[in-house]
Image 1 (cartoon, one colour):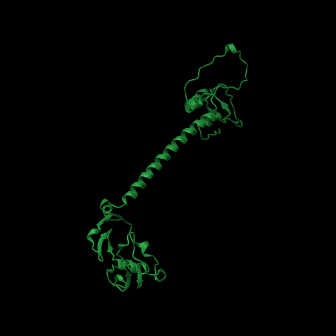
Image 2 (tube, rainbow, N blue to C red; image 1 turned 135 degrees about the vertical axis):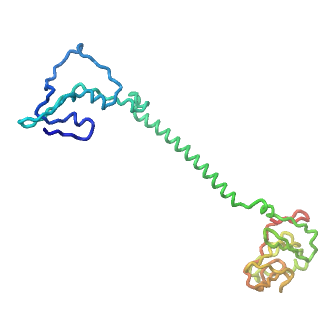
Length: 270
């Protein structure tokens, strides 16, 4: 005898090669039966494998060998129960009146809603993280407190230059005399390396407010000295006039003028 066995649950039930079937099953012809004599058995809530296993006549099949050539016997199974997949289907798809497209659209809408809400939450979280990170690099409270400085100009006599510390840099405040003002205004701009008029560098002609850092290599110039009576950098020989403009030496630019304002006799720098 030759038996054909294939992978799966149903393959051994549908194919067999044997000369004799011992349980007496015979191939019969289909005979029509009146409707009133049919007995309908309600379907049980069983799985597909259990339904097919109970419907197939596989019990008692005993293939035997014979001297005759082997042949195949096929049985026509007309009483196989139809499997029910309701337990595996979505509840919104069990109603045959609902179109599949409508169900798909509803599921897609829910998916888009969740994706959009998640994207908004992620963007808000990223914005908060970036804001906190940037805020951590901003100036501290003690640094911000030194961002501005107030100077009482009434305490500085005419013709004197006073040095203050502002944002870690020396701040020169010079009370200029009328002669110094007239001299600096008479300087022709074409003779200057960094052309700026005296009016562009001062808000009040009597007061010159500049940062005391040489524009060459960052040295601190000496006030009331040099060839032009202003400031002199002894490191490399840069000479500035009483308006803080470079007149001689390697410095390429004039001394920086910080933002400042006047409130009566009070000078606010910053």
